[in-house]
Length: 448
Image (cartoon, rainbow, N blue to C red; front, side, top):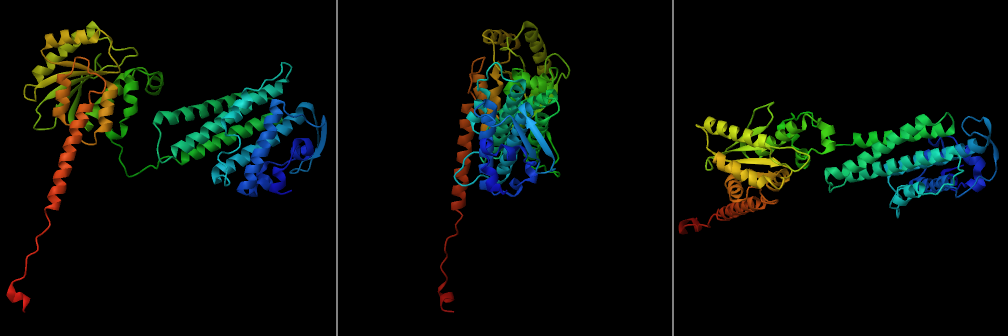
């Protein structure tokens, strides 16, 4: 039997051959063409889907067959026959599908058989009668997890290698689904007693793990010569999530460390914008950063307060008292450094009473105090390629209300873009004016 004949097998017509098939890696499928692999994957996928959903019935209750790999004669009936048929169908589909994922699809085909959305949902949504035997319910659960894992892994790999990279969070959704369904297969594997269905579960778990390993091995290249520095740790998409203490980041960094990580991210962003940043009061209840301008034309410093809270930040009374005390300490300590121009509180969002509380604190501190969303600072870093124009940023902060509106950084970005355009025009004009004039030769040189 060759690969073409393999793809044409039918349960109703060739059940005895199907249950006698050797492992797919030892079959003609191992040397099949792309077209033959696709036809086999499609044919066997339709067959096992129909078998599990009850769309087909085995043509006989008992089959006597000789295994094509070990040559042992076996008699199968009932549940054992059903499980052995399912093992052959799913193992061959999985093997052919993996080969197609590695080598590509034949001309005219878009997706590997089994990767369409209605393939897995059709299995999950199938109506099973109440008297369905337990082994069929187990197969449904196992194969549903397998298909979801395969689909999620495939599209995770496809999007990860796409020339247009999607936002990191979108990739994480596919990766999370793949891992969750893989864990479901593994749990199901432990509950299945020894037999053909156990063999199938082992095979699918191993195959899924090998696929994920292959995906991760093709990840970003690691530059061994590059020393990892502080800016390697900037994670702009996480900034606002850290500020509002999102559960995934609480699990990632630890509940007790999220505030410190948020402060570190703010410090890195501020430094990347062209500021000297000094972290102070380490281990205290509040976390503060003193930011000092590196631009000699803008002599100033400001205080950056990092505030993380699951709910909108309400500026409790104890925080207000601590802030006033610290502002006084900073003003006296900076006697030989640029003066303190303002205080900027950064969180994911303010409560309704924060603007009024900031106005009272500002009057007591005699220093402008503002609140801005963490996402605005992340957007500022993404939209400006070089050092931030500190004069424009300071003007926008001081001219704005106590709670700065979302998008207030747009004016700073516009100022940066205007300066960039002006510099570009100046350089172009300077280079174009460098063309040397043509000097005529003297008369004596023309006749020499």
